[in-house]
Length: 155
Image 1 (cartoon, helix red, strand yellow):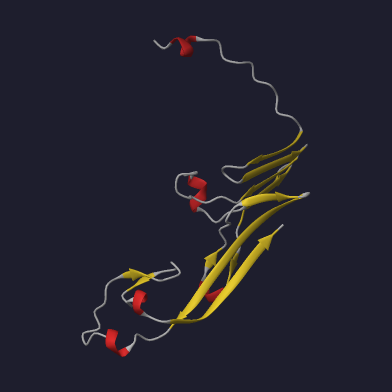
Image 2: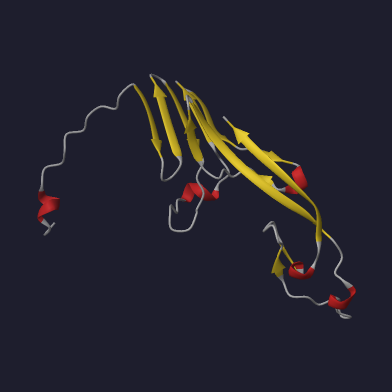
């Protein structure tokens, strides 16, 4: 309490408005309220040097409340090569809509070329080229094929 700013009178708290729409562009978080209905969209992730929020490690991108009825979390996943939950690459306003996007590129790993094979089969533990998993499969030397691209869009 030695700091004079901590000794000042606290500001008067104004009541929250009953209707608003606020996009926090840096964190890709949207809050919409209309009387007893509120909606939250989250399109952020922990991109280096932008935002590091605890929410970013969760695949929850939508919540809804109307009075006492609450949809606390919504997640989305696909079976596309087992890519897991949808994590948006950001939230943008386009006209009267808000859009979440994600583009995935997933390869099929071919066998190691003969000259790269080890007789003991002991390869370095390394991440897959697409970052989905780690394994001792020498990914950097494996050819890939059948690269599939999936673009997800939610408006």
